[in-house]
Structures are given as C-alpha cells and as structure tokens.
Length: 218
Image (cartoon, rainbow, N blue to C red):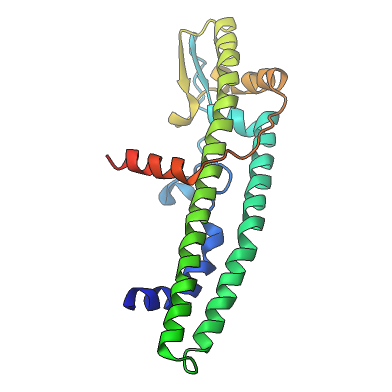
C-alpha cells in the first residue's frame, strides 16, 4: 500500500513533466560555459597549406536543404507525439487531483482500490511515453545517417578535385584559413544530390524495447 500511495502522492510531479520526455530534434552542440562568453577567433592570417583541407559535417547538415527538411520533419513528428500523449496525461492528472480530493471522504479500502487502478494507468502511460521517446530518437538517428551517407560522396568529390592530401573535421579545430574549408562546396553539392528528405516515425513495439533494454544491460 505504501508504494501505491507514494505513487499517487507524486502523480502531479510525475505527469507534469511528461512532455519533456520525448527528445527534441537534433541541435548543434553548445559551447562550454567558459567558452560561451569568449569571442570566436578570427581566421588565422597565415597562408593556406596546400593539400590540407577541412570540412564540417555538422555545418553541412545544418545549412543544407536536406538538413532543414530534417529539422522541420522532426519538429512535426515531435508535435504529433505530444498531441498523442497530452490528452492522456491531462486525464490522469485530473483524475489524480480528484482522487486526492476524495481521500477524506472515501473509505480506506475504496481509496486504496482506486489508487491502485490509477497507479496502473500511470505506469502504462510512462511506458508509452518512454517508447515514443525511443521511437523519435531512432527516427532521428536513421534520418541523419541517410543524410551523412549522401554527404560522403560529395566530400570525396571535393577533396579529390582540390588535391587534398589530408582532410580534417573543422569542428575539432580552433581556426582555419577559409581557403582550406570545403564545407561551402560540400553544402552546394549536397543540395544538388539530396535536395530534401522525407521520413516517418520509426515504430518500436514494447517487446522490441524490452529486448533492447535487456541486451543493453548485459
């Protein structure tokens, strides 16, 4: 009984934050707190190094038309999930408040019976919310992989045409001479090769989620 009543007492806190469980569409990483206030360094004045090139995959995705379509679609899918979950969450919240308000007038066994039933609904809702979050994350990963798969040939084409001997990830560098940066050309090529992306939310059954959780715990 203690467990059930504790769950009931926490219902408002449990369900009020439920909307935050579904992951939002991918966003660019934020700089560390100490670095946020520092001004971005200017490109170094030194000459471009022949044969050394850089490219930013993150920027290529973010600034491409396919990347914009990806962001918009993820926002739509996230909104759809929230629209599905919100009515159920609100009903549970309201029923929890109602039951808590009846605590003083209900017989202890009646209150306990209703509390157990409500707790069962809370647990079922929490499982659904977690499953939808996993589906959105799986969708995000799959869509990003499809974009990156199209970026790679464009990167190869550009570093071949520029006779690059080495290509580095631009995001790992503090600053670089812009003449060594292939990213703008890669974005242009990606926009031609993959103007947009379309996809739907991945579906994961409770059984698949349970199997993945069990495999991850080994």
